[in-house]
Length: 117
View 1 (spheres, rainbow, N blue to C red):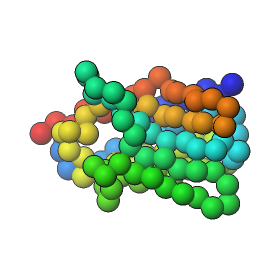
View 2: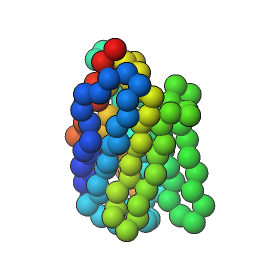
View 3: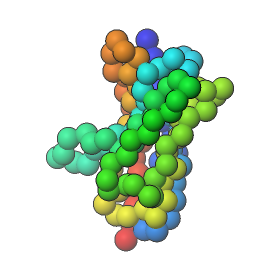
View 4: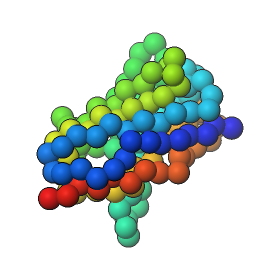
């Protein structure tokens, strides 16, 4: 069982930056894939960015955040991060941390990010 706890959300003006953190209750070294998704009211949860485990790290980003967001992981702290720069009002959403260990999906409780224009 993997528990994920997000932090770092908040209110920021357009053009500003935020860093989200997701702390896992287990070692993330062997978790196949972790990432961030977001959901706005009335919409499905959409992929933001993912990062793989192992010696070769692969990244995947939604087109809408490429060049502005960066995902990273710190295996020693069992934590992943999402650095968000040049934020836009359309980035406003609840952001969820996700993990997949080849057996099932795990989700955090979500953290609200609000970008004011």
